Image (cartoon, rainbow over all chains, first blue to last red):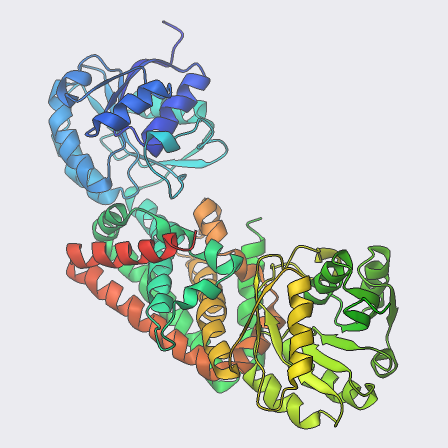
Length: 288
Length: 288
């Protein structure tokens, strides 16, 4: 087993994110035995049947005892709770890392709990779909996607390097940045769009002046645009509340931009409107 | 030719909308000769090469003289201008119809120009992509999509019936409603989402506090969500300005919904946030 990057790994939260990492590392020959931990027995049994994990346990403390790497992929709000439970049971030299979408809050909660000899490396793979559960996991989820690691001054260099190699083995391009920058960037490119999509669907669906569901007239553009409003409500409640400050700031920036557009429409500013749309189109086209 | 629904048809504006209608009607055996009219010679030549139209002309007045149906699919603002040019040259019994995304403005401009013996049937197929030009046209664009016709008290019943059969032959489900209702529904399901997408891309791209383009960190969700911001800027300027009143009202409704969400985040209202997201998810999931 000496060639393996991670001989023994425990994944806590065996859903889309944790399950896909396990599948990717297995496909890359970078991991030995993967133990899954979760609350739902049916999901864990299915994860074993699908080959996502090798075995499972509902006893998190016992399941981390011999792990070289413990990957936490529970919902954001549960991450510090689970970390507090498992950190005292991890072996010397072992690494705890996570996939949480918000980092400042999580790092502030988890770092003080890390015992001497155990390492914590905060991380966030920029990938996902609106689906969830082990059944949604697939090995190429992280292929050619970015993974952001947010080391602090307390982060062990060798542990950081191993986690970097883990995500590279899963196919990701790894970048590092500080937690505040991470949270602001994610508020802009992910958390704000989700809030806007949720609000848009509610605004359109609430318009009942014609006594019929006007969403039935929607076409492909509306469906694509609002796909992210199908995401898990409790997950997004927690992200919104744990990244509150950055998110409120981004919503404010978006409100100003929309107010400018609205004013131009009200005033019939042809040129200004054209330039507003063109600027947006050029920026969007550059992503293709 | 007596079995053909439309022996001779002229399509003014031979792009995605007009070109796809021509292709769909040819595939259904519902049309004879299709003449294309447009400003761009290269696009018209390409349309003939691709089999989208049979022949073309850059002289709109001459090209409509023997047409049974003239389909106007130019940008919204050009529709009344083109209608004014061609209506005096159409033969008795001929039908002018259009595919404009906004109806109240267009009907108010065009109806007074219609000579006795010629018929005008306002319509709008709810279909499209962010691509444009004859090269983007395809025969199945309207398959299983809704087409809204907005007859007025002046609309001839037989002409309305022929246009209904035309869109049915193209694969669409045809519904009729009054122009005001059409414009309000489209403001909600199409025009508002485009405004929101354009504003979102500009808001995110304008955040330059890190001296780098943060859009490079965006993943699939952001790309899908903002795809409609790649739509044609001049087309959307014209739609925004010709459906101004309904659109401003819908933007206002969306702003209120977003403000409610923002307040819940600021106040840490867990339950209220969860319910907001759940309500949106249920409505969005119902579209699948």
